[in-house]
Image (cartoon, rainbow, N blue to C red; front, side, top):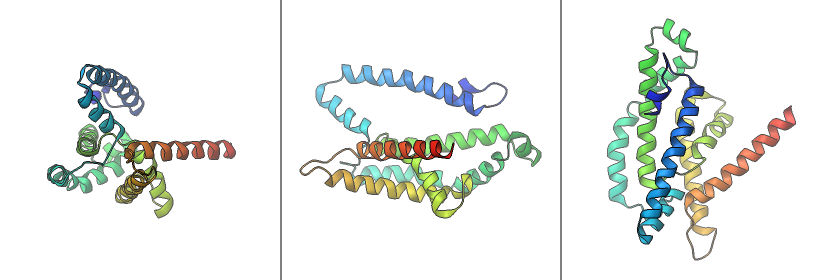
Length: 200
C-alpha cells in the first residue's frame, strides 16, 4: 500500500519514507483503538508483543515461521545482486539492463515479507535493523548490499545479547527484549550524534 501511494512515475526514496511515516501513524492509532476496546488480558498480551518479546515463543511457532522464511531467504542472492545495481542509481542500473521498477518491487516485497515473519513471531523489536548494518560495516569493512549476510549475523547476535540482558537484568522478572534494544539503540544514536557533531 505504501509503495503504491508513493509511486509517481517511479519511486523516490524520500517520498517512500514520508508516506511510510504517515501510514505508520494511521495504523498506530488503529492499534491503539483495538487495544482500548480489547479485554484486559488480551490488551496486556498485545502490549507485551508490541514491546517486542521472545518470551513464550514456542517451537511450533518457530517452525511455521521458518517454513515461510526459508523460501524467502533463497531469494536473497537475487535481491542482493539487484540491490548492488540499484545502488548505482536508476539510470545507471537501467543502462546495465536492469528492470528498475520491477527490481524495486521485488526488494520491497522480500524485505516486507521477511520483516513480517519476524514481527509475527517476536513483535516489533526496535533498533536492531538500524544498528546492525553500520556495526557490520565497521567489522567487515564492507558497506551497503555487499554485506547483507554480515548485517544479518550482527543483527541476530544483537538480538540474542539483548534477550540475555532482558532475562537477567531485573531479578525475578523478564523484560521484553524490545525494551532492552530501545535502550541500546537510543544510546547508539546519541553516540552517533555526538560523533557527527564532533566531526563538524
